[in-house]
Amino acid sequence: MKRTVDPMPPPVILVTGGAGFIGCNFVRYWLREHDDYNVRVLDKLTYAGSMENLEDVLDDPRLTFVKGDVCDPATVDEVMSGVHTVVHFAAETHVDRSILDAGQFVQTDVYGTFVVLETARRHGVDRFLQISTDEVYGSVAEGAAAEDWALMPRNPYSATKAAADRMAYAFFVTHGLPVVITRACNNYGPYQYPEKLIPFFITRAMRSEPLPLYGDGRQVRDWLHVLDNCRAIDLLIERGEPGEVYNVGADNERTNIEIANIILDELRLPENLIAFVKDRPGHDRRYALESSKLRQLGWAPTAEFDTTLRETIRWFRDHQDWCDRSLERSRAYFEAQYHER
Figure 1: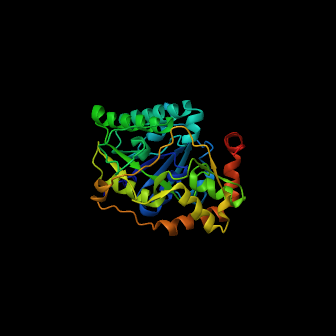
Figure 2: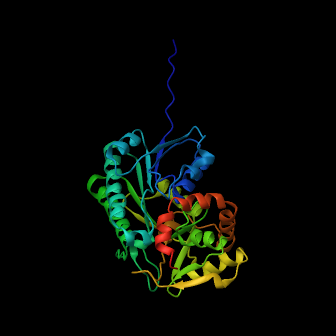
Figure 3: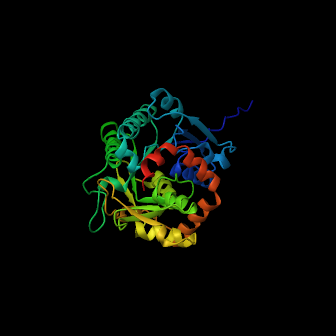
């Protein structure tokens, strides 16, 4: 009698923070590009994460959603069962909020990362992607930060991300956990919570409200489309060297005032909506990344900035109900932060 052999179950990728901005875009990307994987999402659904961000893929049988906190070891242990790859997005991310209350950032970004790392170690995952940020380098006056530059975070958010970044590296060195760390520049695209510069200015402009621009508005950021970031992460899951850091930069520097003017131009609104306000404490003047290490693996950004930024503006314009519901989850914060601006 011929025996049948049960087929191997598909590999599982765990995406923490998968209902947030970059996370939800990555989940869509992965489901589209990897039909041989199951995707498991863990998200606390704080103000910046919403089931609505995954609404169009929730019926996909390959996707499982678990509501839970990365700081809860029991929940993380449950969702880690059978996982092959972890992509750890879950974090508090907004600099302004970290200045007002750093404690939650320490809890989620540092302790939460420890919990996910320790659980992944015990379960023996094959690959762990730690999503860090270019902000860990601090302000870059000249040139571009390479992966071996000293970390000089200058605000509580970037300090907690630097701590998580180095915690992940420590788990590679001490425990042999196959960790790969990415440090990407500023992302833009659909589903970004409207407290960050681009969607914040778009949503205010759509209401003909002033765009509060810190200082002289000439702070420089390198802008990376979220799908180019997803492609970089995908490549590093396959080809990244454990224990290594990879910068993800687009070589696409723009001042904040340039961004504001493009938004107003696309929405056909006057430039006098820009309102210069007092700069925030410790505001980094410029970020810039040297990304040849990643490019040598075959990655390069594909999004043309002006075209995709204008597409992003139109996405938010066409999803005003989504914007309104998102903003309602943080009404008290926005009133406290901006009522005098």
